[in-house]
Length: 238
Ligand SMILES: NC(=O)c1ccc[n+]([C@@H]2O[C@H](COP(=O)([O-])OP(=O)(O)OC[C@H]3O[C@@H](n4cnc5c(N)ncnc54)[C@H](OP(=O)(O)O)[C@@H]3O)[C@@H](O)[C@H]2O)c1
Image (tube, rainbow, N blue to C red):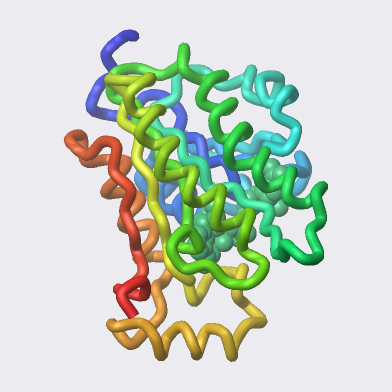
């Protein structure tokens, strides 16, 4: 692996960068003058969102639930400085009314899809490349219907260890948000958000900017490696 420069020269890839936390992080990297590449499933929509984000942002269409196609989608990328794996296709799926196809989608997306992106890009990484995986605190706070979400987010904690070992000296970390109050995922969940707020020691909900602040720390601090960081206002303590 060629040593990278401190000033970024390659791409900052944000898989799942069309909305929510991934998009917010893409905007912040674009403001820093990075060459950002966002992904979403629909090519036209992803390219349009890349234009909205502005700067040197481009869009690539990619579906993590179709892992054998990922290498084709990523072919146009050159050197990568940062890889953020933020995509999610939520699966509320109880054991009693289990929908296997939906569970397979989510398990494939995070476990195989996230890993395959790194497999495809590993020869385009350099010594200063860093990787961030998104898990989530459903791993510690299960709820009815969360079996697959809880399992895959739990698996992210262990993936970080193997990936940081295998890809060294590339750094690999994971971020596990609690319920992010201003993220689009919870836009119609007023009652749920109020109950989370009540059980959060800080007395308020985590914001997307707090999550992206933690993401920037994990991605940019050159000594942080193999870390699973919770950003939840202490929610898991309550
Ligand atoms: N929001 C929260 O409160 C929260 C809490 C805990 C953990 N997290 C974690 O944080 C990360 C970001 O969450 P978020 O709520 O910001 O996400 P989000 O708003 O739901 O956005 C999901 C992103 O994933 C992409 N995506 C969906 N299905 C995909 C597929 N099959 N293949 C590739 N990309 C796909 C979407 O793009 P298109 O729809 O354009 O394809 C979109 O860019 C996730 O990993 C999530 O598990 C979030």
